[in-house]
Image (cartoon, rainbow, N blue to C red):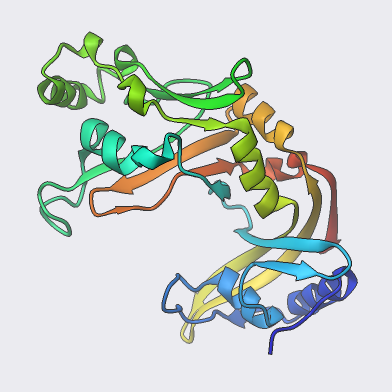
Length: 273
């Protein structure tokens, strides 16, 4: 039976779960990874982490490990032009590099296009984010002259061989130039993140298996897309994350440092601690 909550009853239930202390984690499910998020869903009696509360509408439930430096994923959103499937069909075959498991776990031809980039500086492979307020777009920029000579010389040589051009002439084909419209990105994030409960947890290994303890809940209300754009544009704190290999595109993610999440909302309050 799926539970139905009001905001107040959900906060009470989350407080009860905190008081339960260490809990054995849910085993992995058929289509996902199990772990603290699924365990919390099971304890709440909900099937997915986006659920309606009758008094305030849709809410997102997110979990994050205490003191973890891992980035928090806000949304998955593939770049335009989406009909061309830019990441798997263009960036990966043309700008990808040999996967570290190529010839081992995967075929020798397996390529990777996996990197986390921001607007503050180019990655060592020459990629960067540009927030363009004149065109209302988030763009991915590539500059072959920004590829790091000391750490990525092999990548430079590989691109020259692949494109049959000197490195300074290698650019992204304008037909495949990746970008995200502000409006589309706003709709995607607003739908997913309008109101959110961010639940922080601790984790440990025992003889019985992994155990999790939920220790703090932050209630976030009224997501502000412009605030995310400001962080993406101004600070080394918001990122676009590509995670594709020849066999599978794990998706393009918009991410942020966890401690800055409250800046994305009009209202934020610790409701369980």
